[in-house]
Image (cartoon, rainbow, N blue to C red; front, side, top):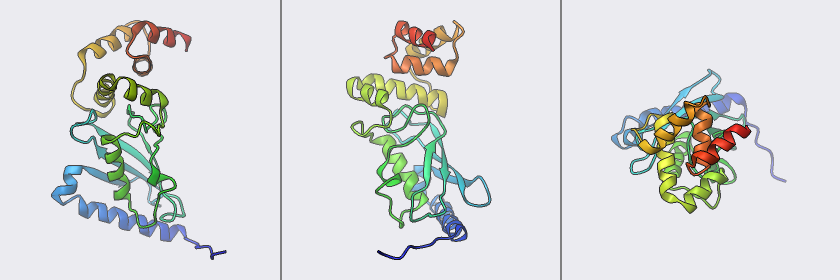
Length: 210
């Protein structure tokens, strides 16, 4: 069997540091600043980072800023970083509950030559081109396939509420306010309406059953 490659935490942190420097340099170029990606250190050991990507243009996420939790394993770069969305998002390949991501390069298609910049740009590309047949969130994927217009409006509303994107559907906003006025938690109301096709009656039943 091939010899095992041992990688020390120090070596891993040096590689992360280089990756961060690369992102910093690239972000000064007009091309990447348009892409709007950035990474900040959370701790001095380079084991946890905070990423941020901008919602891509011509998508429901446009105008939103999405925070990412990035955890670097000691075996990086031979194993991928663990990444999840901190900012709530309505997308077939991202859990609307936990922010877990279904993306091949974060799993079996990872290569040691890839950088954190590759990861962030790949996530931006995922926002622009969902893969509903390989979903992380089955409810979202079903809506994406069955009712694309409702999916767009719902994703836009989540982008507005959670990621600071411009205002979305006044009809959906009104339904949220009506249920919040009944004393339900706003986040729970948004999830219930989103998952029940914006039908107030079935959303209310779901809220009451919880």
